[in-house]
Image (cartoon, rainbow, N blue to C red):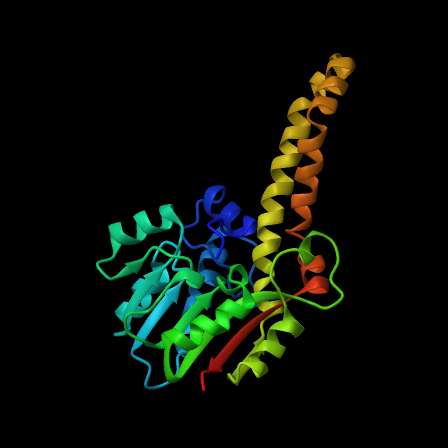
Length: 265
Protein backbone atom coordinates (compact mmCIF):
# COMPACT_ATOMS: atom_id res chain seq x y z
CA UNK A 1 0.00 0.00 0.00
CA UNK A 2 1.45 3.37 -0.94
CA UNK A 3 2.06 5.89 1.81
CA UNK A 4 0.63 8.58 -0.43
CA UNK A 5 -3.10 8.96 -0.93
CA UNK A 6 -4.73 9.29 -4.31
CA UNK A 7 -3.84 12.75 -5.69
CA UNK A 8 -7.46 13.66 -6.31
CA UNK A 9 -8.40 12.91 -2.74
CA UNK A 10 -5.36 14.68 -1.33
CA UNK A 11 -6.51 17.70 -3.30
CA UNK A 12 -9.93 17.46 -1.63
CA UNK A 13 -8.27 17.20 1.79
CA UNK A 14 -5.53 19.81 1.47
CA UNK A 15 -7.16 22.37 -0.85
CA UNK A 16 -10.87 22.00 -0.12
CA UNK A 17 -10.32 21.37 3.59
CA UNK A 18 -12.28 18.12 3.76
CA UNK A 19 -11.73 15.65 6.59
CA UNK A 20 -12.73 12.63 4.54
CA UNK A 21 -10.31 11.08 2.04
CA UNK A 22 -12.72 9.26 -0.24
CA UNK A 23 -15.18 9.85 -3.06
CA UNK A 24 -18.84 10.54 -2.36
CA UNK A 25 -22.07 8.99 -3.58
CA UNK A 26 -24.10 11.76 -5.20
CA UNK A 27 -27.76 12.01 -6.04
CA UNK A 28 -28.56 12.93 -9.69
CA UNK A 29 -30.09 16.26 -8.66
CA UNK A 30 -27.19 17.35 -6.40
CA UNK A 31 -25.53 20.63 -7.38
CA UNK A 32 -21.75 20.96 -7.26
CA UNK A 33 -21.28 22.54 -3.84
CA UNK A 34 -18.91 21.72 -1.00
CA UNK A 35 -21.87 21.11 1.28
CA UNK A 36 -23.28 18.52 -1.13
CA UNK A 37 -19.83 16.94 -1.43
CA UNK A 38 -19.69 16.48 2.33
CA UNK A 39 -23.16 14.94 2.32
CA UNK A 40 -22.15 12.65 -0.57
CA UNK A 41 -19.13 11.42 1.39
CA UNK A 42 -21.30 10.65 4.41
CA UNK A 43 -23.74 8.84 2.08
CA UNK A 44 -20.79 6.76 0.81
CA UNK A 45 -19.93 5.70 4.37
CA UNK A 46 -23.55 4.87 5.18
CA UNK A 47 -23.71 2.80 2.00
CA UNK A 48 -20.75 0.69 3.15
CA UNK A 49 -22.15 0.21 6.66
CA UNK A 50 -25.43 -1.01 5.21
CA UNK A 51 -23.53 -3.57 3.10
CA UNK A 52 -21.85 -5.26 6.07
CA UNK A 53 -23.26 -8.81 6.28
CA UNK A 54 -25.15 -10.06 9.29
CA UNK A 55 -23.00 -11.86 11.82
CA UNK A 56 -19.94 -9.66 11.28
CA UNK A 57 -18.51 -8.27 14.51
CA UNK A 58 -14.74 -7.90 14.20
CA UNK A 59 -13.57 -5.58 11.40
CA UNK A 60 -10.15 -4.40 10.20
CA UNK A 61 -10.39 -0.99 8.49
CA UNK A 62 -7.55 -1.30 5.97
CA UNK A 63 -6.26 2.12 4.97
CA UNK A 64 -8.22 3.77 7.74
CA UNK A 65 -7.38 7.35 6.82
CA UNK A 66 -8.26 9.86 9.52
CA UNK A 67 -10.43 7.31 11.33
CA UNK A 68 -13.85 8.73 10.49
CA UNK A 69 -15.11 5.45 9.04
CA UNK A 70 -13.68 3.55 12.00
CA UNK A 71 -15.56 5.82 14.38
CA UNK A 72 -18.81 5.28 12.46
CA UNK A 73 -18.36 1.51 12.71
CA UNK A 74 -17.61 1.77 16.44
CA UNK A 75 -20.77 3.81 16.93
CA UNK A 76 -22.69 1.01 15.20
CA UNK A 77 -21.38 -1.48 17.76
CA UNK A 78 -18.66 -3.19 15.73
CA UNK A 79 -15.26 -4.18 17.14
CA UNK A 80 -12.90 -2.28 14.84
CA UNK A 81 -9.15 -1.86 14.38
CA UNK A 82 -7.32 0.46 12.01
CA UNK A 83 -4.39 -0.11 9.67
CA UNK A 84 -2.31 2.28 7.57
CA UNK A 85 1.39 2.74 6.75
CA UNK A 86 0.93 6.53 6.65
CA UNK A 87 2.56 8.34 9.59
CA UNK A 88 0.21 11.32 9.48
CA UNK A 89 -2.84 9.08 9.43
CA UNK A 90 -1.45 7.16 12.39
CA UNK A 91 -1.07 10.38 14.40
CA UNK A 92 -4.59 11.62 13.62
CA UNK A 93 -6.15 8.18 14.18
CA UNK A 94 -4.48 7.47 17.53
CA UNK A 95 -5.13 10.99 18.77
CA UNK A 96 -8.87 10.71 18.17
CA UNK A 97 -9.62 7.00 18.73
CA UNK A 98 -8.78 4.61 21.55
CA UNK A 99 -8.73 1.41 19.50
CA UNK A 100 -5.84 -0.70 18.14
CA UNK A 101 -4.00 0.80 15.19
CA UNK A 102 -1.53 -1.20 13.08
CA UNK A 103 1.15 0.95 11.47
CA UNK A 104 1.90 -1.38 8.57
CA UNK A 105 1.24 -1.82 4.90
CA UNK A 106 -1.36 -4.54 4.39
CA UNK A 107 1.20 -6.73 2.63
CA UNK A 108 3.41 -6.76 5.76
CA UNK A 109 0.64 -7.08 8.33
CA UNK A 110 0.25 -10.30 10.31
CA UNK A 111 -3.00 -10.65 12.23
CA UNK A 112 -2.74 -11.85 15.83
CA UNK A 113 -6.45 -12.73 15.71
CA UNK A 114 -8.55 -13.21 12.60
CA UNK A 115 -11.37 -10.90 11.51
CA UNK A 116 -14.93 -11.34 10.32
CA UNK A 117 -14.48 -8.63 7.69
CA UNK A 118 -11.73 -6.64 6.02
CA UNK A 119 -12.92 -3.23 4.83
CA UNK A 120 -10.86 -1.72 2.00
CA UNK A 121 -12.37 1.64 1.10
CA UNK A 122 -10.16 2.97 -1.72
CA UNK A 123 -7.12 1.17 -0.35
CA UNK A 124 -7.14 -2.03 -2.45
CA UNK A 125 -5.63 -0.11 -5.37
CA UNK A 126 -2.38 0.35 -3.40
CA UNK A 127 -1.91 -3.33 -2.53
CA UNK A 128 -0.26 -5.85 -4.82
CA UNK A 129 -3.12 -8.01 -6.11
CA UNK A 130 -1.58 -11.38 -5.35
CA UNK A 131 -0.53 -10.29 -1.85
CA UNK A 132 -3.96 -8.78 -1.26
CA UNK A 133 -5.76 -12.09 -1.63
CA UNK A 134 -3.00 -14.09 0.04
CA UNK A 135 -2.98 -11.92 3.15
CA UNK A 136 -6.77 -11.51 3.18
CA UNK A 137 -7.15 -15.27 3.55
CA UNK A 138 -4.67 -15.26 6.44
CA UNK A 139 -6.43 -12.37 8.19
CA UNK A 140 -9.99 -13.63 7.75
CA UNK A 141 -11.90 -16.28 9.61
CA UNK A 142 -13.24 -19.13 7.43
CA UNK A 143 -16.12 -17.70 5.37
CA UNK A 144 -15.12 -14.17 6.41
CA UNK A 145 -15.73 -11.21 4.12
CA UNK A 146 -13.48 -8.98 2.05
CA UNK A 147 -15.31 -5.73 1.31
CA UNK A 148 -13.76 -3.52 -1.38
CA UNK A 149 -15.03 -0.17 -2.64
CA UNK A 150 -12.60 1.25 -5.18
CA UNK A 151 -11.95 2.13 -8.79
CA UNK A 152 -10.40 -0.24 -11.32
CA UNK A 153 -8.82 0.28 -14.73
CA UNK A 154 -10.72 -0.94 -17.78
CA UNK A 155 -9.04 -3.17 -20.35
CA UNK A 156 -8.51 -0.58 -23.10
CA UNK A 157 -7.73 2.38 -20.83
CA UNK A 158 -5.19 4.97 -22.00
CA UNK A 159 -3.46 8.08 -20.66
CA UNK A 160 -2.78 9.04 -17.05
CA UNK A 161 -6.01 7.50 -15.83
CA UNK A 162 -4.79 4.08 -16.91
CA UNK A 163 -1.83 4.26 -14.53
CA UNK A 164 -3.54 4.12 -11.14
CA UNK A 165 -5.67 1.25 -9.93
CA UNK A 166 -5.78 -2.47 -10.65
CA UNK A 167 -6.90 -3.89 -13.97
CA UNK A 168 -10.50 -4.90 -13.40
CA UNK A 169 -10.49 -8.05 -15.55
CA UNK A 170 -7.25 -9.30 -14.00
CA UNK A 171 -8.56 -8.58 -10.51
CA UNK A 172 -11.74 -10.57 -11.08
CA UNK A 173 -9.70 -13.45 -12.54
CA UNK A 174 -7.73 -13.54 -9.28
CA UNK A 175 -10.95 -13.60 -7.26
CA UNK A 176 -11.86 -16.82 -9.03
CA UNK A 177 -8.39 -18.31 -8.79
CA UNK A 178 -8.15 -17.68 -5.06
CA UNK A 179 -11.57 -19.30 -4.50
CA UNK A 180 -13.24 -16.23 -3.06
CA UNK A 181 -16.98 -16.14 -3.74
CA UNK A 182 -18.51 -12.99 -5.24
CA UNK A 183 -21.44 -12.09 -2.99
CA UNK A 184 -22.00 -8.68 -4.56
CA UNK A 185 -20.48 -6.71 -7.45
CA UNK A 186 -22.03 -3.28 -8.04
CA UNK A 187 -20.95 -0.64 -10.55
CA UNK A 188 -21.38 2.74 -8.82
CA UNK A 189 -19.26 4.79 -11.25
CA UNK A 190 -22.04 7.21 -12.21
CA UNK A 191 -22.81 7.89 -8.55
CA UNK A 192 -19.27 8.96 -7.56
CA UNK A 193 -17.89 10.98 -10.47
CA UNK A 194 -19.40 14.28 -9.38
CA UNK A 195 -16.62 14.22 -6.78
CA UNK A 196 -14.24 14.81 -9.68
CA UNK A 197 -16.50 17.44 -11.22
CA UNK A 198 -16.44 19.65 -8.14
CA UNK A 199 -12.66 19.31 -7.76
CA UNK A 200 -12.18 20.27 -11.42
CA UNK A 201 -14.55 23.21 -11.02
CA UNK A 202 -12.45 24.56 -8.15
CA UNK A 203 -9.23 24.14 -10.14
CA UNK A 204 -10.71 25.81 -13.23
CA UNK A 205 -11.85 28.78 -11.15
CA UNK A 206 -8.42 29.11 -9.57
CA UNK A 207 -6.64 29.00 -12.93
CA UNK A 208 -9.02 31.61 -14.33
CA UNK A 209 -8.30 33.89 -11.37
CA UNK A 210 -4.55 33.55 -11.94
CA UNK A 211 -5.00 34.24 -15.65
CA UNK A 212 -6.99 37.42 -14.95
CA UNK A 213 -4.55 38.58 -12.27
CA UNK A 214 -1.50 38.22 -14.55
CA UNK A 215 -3.08 39.63 -17.71
CA UNK A 216 -1.78 43.15 -17.02
CA UNK A 217 1.75 41.85 -16.46
CA UNK A 218 1.64 39.93 -19.74
CA UNK A 219 0.61 43.08 -21.63
CA UNK A 220 3.24 45.31 -20.03
CA UNK A 221 6.14 42.85 -20.04
CA UNK A 222 5.61 40.21 -22.74
CA UNK A 223 9.29 39.20 -22.80
CA UNK A 224 9.41 38.64 -19.05
CA UNK A 225 6.15 36.72 -19.26
CA UNK A 226 7.50 34.46 -22.00
CA UNK A 227 10.68 33.87 -19.99
CA UNK A 228 8.71 32.93 -16.86
CA UNK A 229 6.48 30.59 -18.87
CA UNK A 230 9.57 28.96 -20.37
CA UNK A 231 11.22 28.58 -16.95
CA UNK A 232 8.16 26.90 -15.49
CA UNK A 233 7.07 25.02 -18.61
CA UNK A 234 7.56 21.59 -17.04
CA UNK A 235 5.47 22.43 -13.99
CA UNK A 236 2.79 23.97 -16.20
CA UNK A 237 2.62 20.86 -18.37
CA UNK A 238 2.50 18.67 -15.28
CA UNK A 239 -0.36 20.78 -13.94
CA UNK A 240 -2.29 20.33 -17.17
CA UNK A 241 -1.79 16.58 -17.00
CA UNK A 242 -3.05 16.53 -13.40
CA UNK A 243 -6.25 18.25 -14.51
CA UNK A 244 -6.88 15.22 -16.74
CA UNK A 245 -7.31 13.19 -13.54
CA UNK A 246 -10.31 15.36 -12.64
CA UNK A 247 -12.15 14.83 -15.93
CA UNK A 248 -15.19 12.69 -15.07
CA UNK A 249 -15.90 11.84 -18.71
CA UNK A 250 -12.38 10.50 -19.15
CA UNK A 251 -12.68 8.67 -15.84
CA UNK A 252 -15.76 6.82 -17.12
CA UNK A 253 -13.95 5.88 -20.34
CA UNK A 254 -10.98 4.44 -18.51
CA UNK A 255 -12.16 3.27 -15.09
CA UNK A 256 -14.99 1.53 -13.31
CA UNK A 257 -15.80 2.25 -9.68
CA UNK A 258 -17.00 -0.91 -7.93
CA UNK A 259 -18.41 -2.18 -4.68
CA UNK A 260 -17.26 -5.77 -4.21
CA UNK A 261 -18.25 -8.07 -1.37
CA UNK A 262 -16.23 -11.28 -1.48
CA UNK A 263 -16.42 -14.26 0.84
CA UNK A 264 -13.36 -16.27 1.76
CA UNK A 265 -13.33 -20.08 1.41
